[in-house]
Length: 330
Ligand code: FAD
Ligand code: NDP
Image 1 (cartoon, helix red, strand yellow):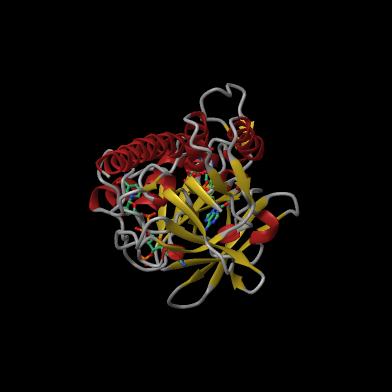
Image 2: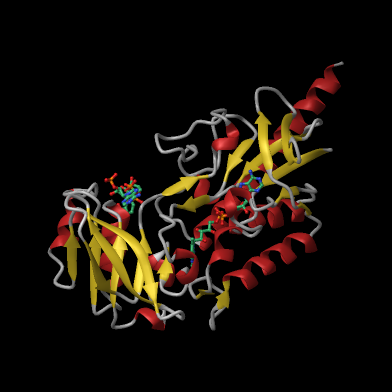
């Protein structure tokens, strides 16, 4: 199958790109993934409960309802949505080639396109400790900014795991709601920048637990009530009463399938020309968390999806103009 625009990814960035591309009559095809990276079609928002900071929903909306609405809006303007995962691409020549996952690996015949929007997102790292399956979203989360204000966490002790800027920022953020916040750091130093680390260390509502692993989440069968800590040096264990556990141990951008064909930074995030969605390959655009490790919000992802579609539209117009000029010279 050949398309003018293919979009890989089904979060807010992919669907916003699809809505814009479809309204521009580019007849986009969107691969929404089949549990790509362990996440359902719709992306990270399908893993959360209430979304309260996406404009247009003053009473809030569940993550799954919001992603269903994105999908419905993409389809309304004619986006073709395919529930398959792209496993491999060849961006070395035009048209670009993409292979879908099938039972024995990759499809034999590639799909092709004139322009490509990569909107595959990023996956928050988790530790998969004992009890995580049971208490995920019942006190455990990978996004303090998103979930921290929930009633479950108000005036309760909470723990953040990680030692980077995210852990410090999220712990500081959580002090607005929590009675106290612990940061469990696996070694005796922060990775975070000095200023962020100092802000956390000096905060009266934050205690840093150095050399500490969190090895188990426990609760009352309904919600999380405490965690089991282990001293990284002595291996001694103890319980800590908390109503919330937040992972802040980094994200993995979903770029492995690109096999190094697009420029990434040292942590795998796609690099774009500042202020645009342009990657190092002409005709290939990036949108959403796959190129944004700073903001990582649904609304910023949606905004960059719009940018990618507008950039793709402009690129296709230029291709068309070039082709017409060539034809007129013949
Ligand atoms: P993603 O949402 O990451 O979606 C990309 C999706 O594309 C993947 O999940 C997968 O389904 C698909 N895909 C990936 N690879 C492939 C492939 N190779 N082929 C085909 N398909 C593929 N933000 C807010 O603004 N408000 C909130 O309340 C909020 N709550 C959150 C709660 C949690 C628990 C988490 C983890 C995040 C939350 N966020 C929230 C952040 C928000 O979800 C992300 O910033 C946003 O979803 C990023 O959108 P995206 O389009 O870049 O990609
Ligand atoms: P980082 O990769 O910087 O830090 C991850 C932290 O998690 C490290 O302290 C690491 O420990 C710890 N960690 C990793 N794996 C485990 C594990 N299995 N068990 C326990 N701890 C673990 O990720 P961040 O998300 O914090 O930051 C990503 C980028 O975003 C950075 O460049 C950061 O500067 C930037 N950022 C900037 C902000 C700002 O300026 N306002 C806010 C948030 C992020 P260890 O150190 O031992 O490896």
